[in-house]
Image (cartoon, rainbow, N blue to C red; front, side, top):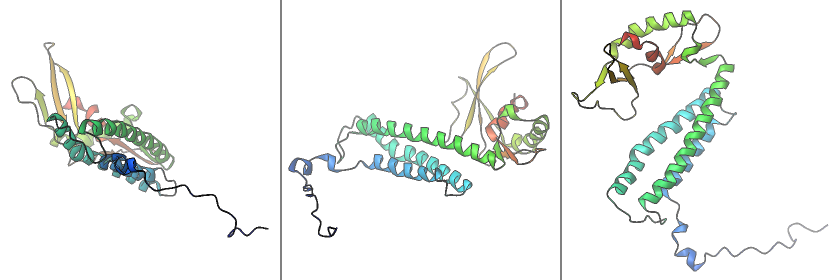
Length: 231
């Protein structure tokens, strides 16, 4: 039997960079696209069944927070350059507009994967007795107890804001959540309003359920169910 150590090996391909490659911007990796690839690897940890379920949910949350910061800081800088008509190329040969086109495609793919992962994790949470309930899935008892929770803990910190020519457009903070509402006045006139989701209240409210397991509803949905208390 031939000794594997002395067995003739196939010829190695010449890995010396060609002159045109040495002078090409293709030898660089775009910084922003590299960051998106890194955050995709963070999201992959949410898909790792060897991690505890809530840890997987935490990885998903981290990837979402990272994406928010990326869009607010790094992408915002490129948008500002595009708005000012700057067309200088980065080391990898892309203009701000070219980078934004590639970033938009990468962000769309990452967001789609985040939503897919969220749906799978929610299904796994249900199997473990943890459910995020939609408004149509509430029982009568849960609706009554939720109304009491809303009136005592949420209602006092809500401030509806009118949108009309007589008022400046309301300030919408970064990373904030708001409900945009189209209202009809008693005289039939259509009106617009915003209801900011308060940051000082937990994003999910635990329901007073009569069965087994833990059931929660998103704060935004709880407010939607009780809009008649505001208007």
